[in-house]
Length: 318
Image (tube, rainbow, N blue to C red; front, top):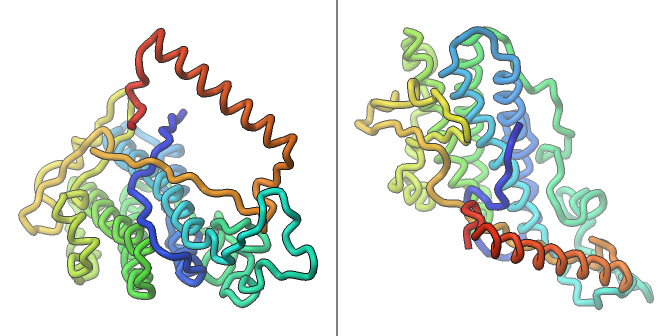
C-alpha cells in the first residue's frame, strides 16, 4: 500500500505558456522511454520479485515509487505550459464561443490539438507524436541481472532524450523540470549500476553510460552541486534494506559517494490550476460552485479542529 503527500518533488518554475514545449515534454511522460514506463516497469518488477534478495527489491521499488512523483511532476509541468495559452478573458459562468467568437482559435494550429480537445489544457498519456502509452513497453523478465541491465538502459536512454528535449526549448518551466529529471536519471543509473557491481558484473565494460557532461546545463549543474544525482530515496515508513546496495563510491568513478535517504530533503507545494471556462473545466454552474465552496469550508474547519486536538500535521509543510 502507498501513502501520498500533497507536495511536488521539484518546484514548477513560472514562464509563459508554450504548447509546443508541452508537446515535446509529452515524450518524457508517455514515450517508450518516458516516466510512465519507468514507473510501471520498476513497480511491476518489485511486485513480481522472487527470492530473498530484499535489498534489490527495496532498491527497485524505491525508485519505482519515486517515478510516481516524476509522472506527477511532468503532468503538472505540461499543464502549466498549456494553461492559459488561448488567453481567454471571459466570465466564469459564461458560455465561451457565443456570438461566433472562437475562444481557442490558436489550438487547432498546435502540434497536438488533443491537449485542447481531449484534455482541458492538461497532460495526456501519449508520446510527442500522440501515440497512446502502451503496457508493452514494460519489461519484467523475472531474472534479476537482466532486469537491472534493462533498467540501466532505460535510465540511460531516458536521460539522453531529456537532454535533447532540454535543447528544444528555452522555456524556464520546461527546463527546470527536465533538468531535475536529468539529474535524477543519473542517480538511478548509479543505483542500477551499483546493484550490478554487487552481483559481480563489470557494468562499465558491458554497458557504459553515455559519455556527456550534463552539468554544462546551468539548471542541472545547480542540482548536481547540491548532490541530488547521488541520492536515492526509500519512501518507506517501515524500514528498507536499500542502503546495503546504494552506498559507497559511485560507479561513475568520479570520487562521489552514494547516499540513501528516507525521502528527499525538500518538497514543494503544488501550484493550484486555475479554472478554464473556455474548456468548461471544471464546468461548475453557480449552484454547484456554492456546494463546492461549502465543502471546502467544511474541510478547512475540520482540519483546524483536528489540529487543535492533536496538534499540527507533521507531514504538512507550510
